[in-house]
Amino acid sequence: MNVQTAKTLNIIGCGRVGKTLARLWTRQSSFVVQDILNRSLASARRAVSFIGAGRAVERYADLRTADIYMIAAGDGQIAQCCEELAAAGKLSAHTLVFHCSGALPSSILQAAARNGAAIASVHPIRSFADPEQAANEFAGTYCGVEGDAQALVVLNKAFASIGGRLAPIDAGSKTIYHSAAVFACNYLVTLLDVAIQAYKKSGIPQDTALKLMEPLVRGTLDNVFRIGPADALSGPIARGDIATAENQLRAVHAWNKEYGNLYEQFMKLTADIAARRSTSGQGVED
Image 1 (tube, rainbow, N blue to C red):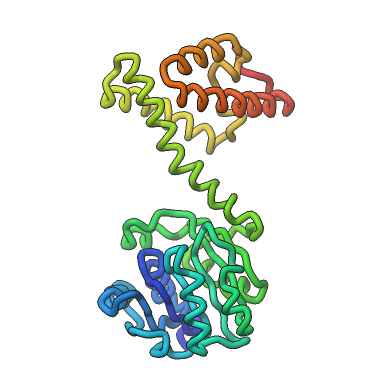
Image 2: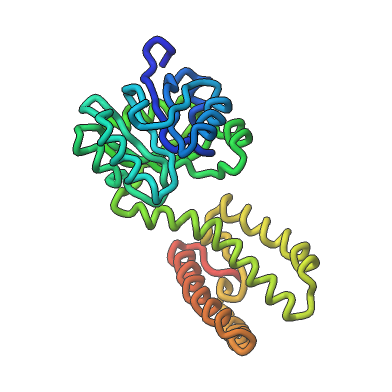
């Protein structure tokens, strides 16, 4: 796209995600960023300053008609934002509306669909805690996408222009899709904290436990991404030493029933991974 033919973009709820994407699109002339509507005019002005384009507005009525509307508000506000946008008479069969939530399907934008607009969702799978850093490192970011075909044609081109790698997902499984990131990121932290508590129970201070764990954890993660989880699996269950695993289960359960229940569940899931490797001809660890 170029500035002369680029579609116009209005943004509702232009926080960290919204302003990062808008800055990148402005740099690439992918879209013409037009109006920014946030909870406060001051917030919208800060977004405009970061983006380097656009105009801060206070009300839906102040939004100029645009080709595309990105709703980058929090999950709990997306449906209401869309309802208010529709009520303001800004939508038509020539409009595209999308949101950036990882947990909600594009169907949450039904108010836009009822007015003839094409709808979609695009979820960039990365942290936007620091928008400046996120903008500098966005190239190569995978984005989960779903929605109307005509919307995805436009959005695929726009995200590709800033280095996004698009991964189509099943809209009916959007919540499960989002849980994958929670397992991989949030619950990994929880699991490592359980390991720290186990080390502390055995007399190792937390700072030492972290140093002790680091090469083990980093090496395991490197192996998972290099050769896949089945081949990266090691330990007693991987080598068929169920007696050792069961002895650990009893010890952990006696120490902390909640952690023991967690350990038991991980034993079952880990056995499934080991069986997967065995049936693929890789065998189990010696």
